[in-house]
Length: 116
Image 1 (cartoon, rainbow, N blue to C red):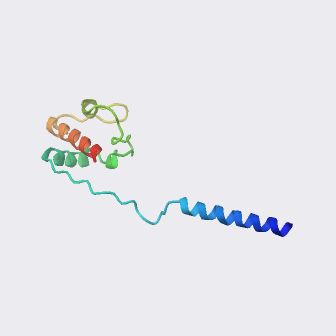
Image 2: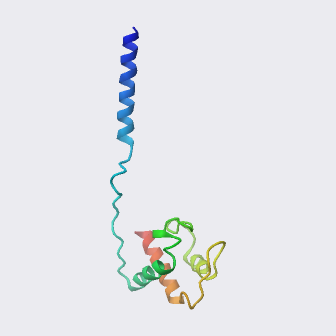
Image 3: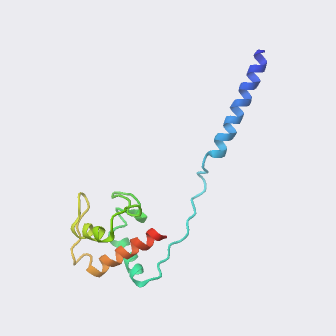
């Protein structure tokens, strides 16, 4: 009887280990994503301006020092206002730092990235 219980227990542990390994993600392989390539001139310029001014705090539009932008549901005009005037720990950017056109292009880039 005792031997039978040990066999059942061992079979249960082996089964649990198999399920655990099957459900675990493989950490040795990077997650592959499609490359985002901007086609529109405004989106390309927005990408360049984003990399210059925003990438440090919002890497890839995700959360870093600042919150994620990709999942931010705020309208584009609110995001442009926040870029211009700052909010909380986010710095403001003057018209000399980011022109009105670049601000609109960053907005176009974020919109295109969100669709991607």
